[in-house]
Structures are given as structure tokens and as C-alpha cells.
Image 1 (cartoon, rainbow, N blue to C red):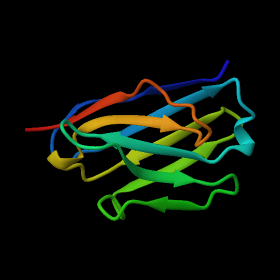
Image 2 (tube, one colour):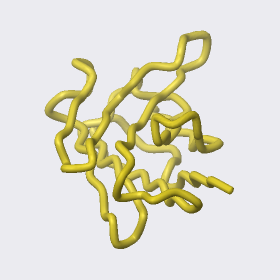
Image 3 (cartoon, one colour):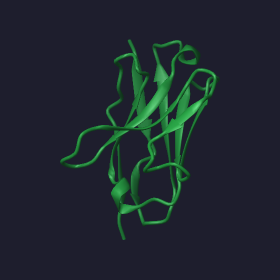
Length: 112
């Protein structure tokens, strides 16, 4: 049974940082590309960042230069380091293995 469990969300002031984690089980993690999506209230889910099995990364234009995705295959975990957070980054952040599996999400709220 595949499980993706996100953690690390919370309330943060604009300009601060957060690091999200997604722990995977039930998959051969090292052979899966991984990604982070987000969904803000009233908006569609959008791709934030992705990382291939060889560590090649891709980012949405809105987060380039501020967010960084990484993976630790020994820990079956993918991370999203978010710096310079803005109120428009407020959303539920979801982890996926691009194989139809999703976590339940973690809420990030950026507000003063």
C-alpha cells in the first residue's frame, strides 16, 4: 500500500521560510520522480516543483529562485524548502509520485 505523508506546514509571516517533507512508503522511491503541487482556496491544483530520479528539478515560474525541491533516497523522503514566502503562497501543499498517488496535504498559511 502506497503512502505519502506530508509534514512541515504551518503559519508563517511573509518573508520567512518553511521546509516541507513528504515521507513515502510502499513504492520503490528511488525509481520514482516526485513532485509538489499546491491548491489555494478557490483555485485549481498547480504544480510547484518536481524532481526526477536523477535529481533534475523543475519549478513553476511563481516560485523560481525561492523554492527548492530535493530528495533523500535513503530516507524515502522528498523536501520542499520554501524561502521568501509570500501571502500568495498560502495553499494546501500535496506530494505526488506522478503514479496516481497523493498525500493528504499540509496547509501553509503566509500571513502577518
